[in-house]
Image (cartoon, rainbow, N blue to C red):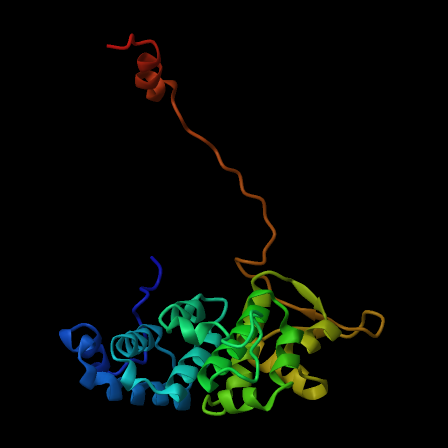
Length: 250
C-alpha cells in the first residue's frame, strides 16, 4: 500500500488537529500555517497537505495572503520533483498571478507584478525539471539574482535539488558519463565525488579512457528485466456476450 497523500512524518500534532478538523477553514489559523511553512524552510521538512490548506485559505481570504509565504511554498514544492506538488500549488493561485500581464509569452517581463514575476520564474524552473533539463535548471537558477532571493529562505535548497536529481536519475539509469553528471549536479572535482559517494552511495569508474563513468547500483526501477503477462480468460466468461449477440431485438 502506498503512502497516503496527506501523510507527513514530521507534522506537529496541533497542525494535524487543524487539518483534520473544522479549523482548517478558519481564517484565524492562517498565521499558524504561515509559521509552519517557515519551520519547514528552516528544518528541511515538507508537508504538501498543510501547504495546500494554506493556499486554499488564501483563495477564500485574499487579503490574508503573503507573497513571501506563497513563493516559499512553491520553492519547497520544487524540492520534491517529479511529484506534481508544484502544479497542485499553482492551481490554487489566482489567474492574474499565473499569466503575465505585459506579454503573451510564458516568460516573465519587467512590467509584471512582483508576485506574478516570481511565480512565472519558478514555473520556468519547474518546466526545466519536468523536461529533465538539469543543466539548464542550474544555468537558469544562476542567471538572475531574483532566483537567489526566492530560494534564500529554503535551508539547503541546492543540496535538496541535487538529491532529487540523483533519485530521478537513479530510477532510470545504471551508468552516466561523469561529465554529464557534473553538469546535472553543478558540481566538480572532490565536491562532486564526495556528494556521489557519501550522500548517494554511488561509485565513479575512472578507468574508462579518462572520461569517467558514474556507476549507479541496481534497484527495482533501473533493473532491466523482462515481464511476461499471461491472460487467464476462459471461454465460458464470454458466454453471455456471445449469447446476446444472437438475441433478436424486442
